[in-house]
Amino acid sequence: LFIIFMGVITWQIIPNSLRLFCGRFGRRHRIMGLVHGLLLIISLTMTAIQFFSKNRQSLWFLMDFSLGLSGIALTLTAAYDFKKAHAKAKNAASGTLDETAIVTFSEMIEHVFYQA
Image (cartoon, rainbow, N blue to C red; front, side, top):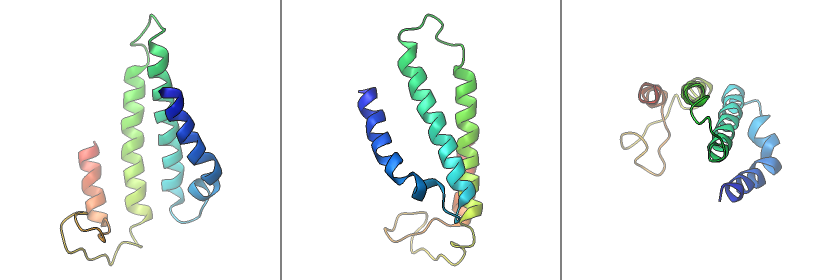
């Protein structure tokens, strides 16, 4: 199941990697997305390997801490990279409850609070 999951992710990312990670708009967010994605892949790989290992707790604290920090950084880069583009967003409902809603800067900063 793990190999199938990783294959699907790779099948989607590789052909679209230039568009996903090399554009100018939101560059910091794109780079942090790549870093966060790589950490998730490493974490999934560690999970798969742990079934065959005797030392199961050695790097998990470091991995959990790194994923938490990269998640916070990913959210912050989204907030600041898209702040100007979302500055005039007016939503009919709170948050993203409306299908045409745009996440505002303050909602992204609020998400950082809950992420931490």
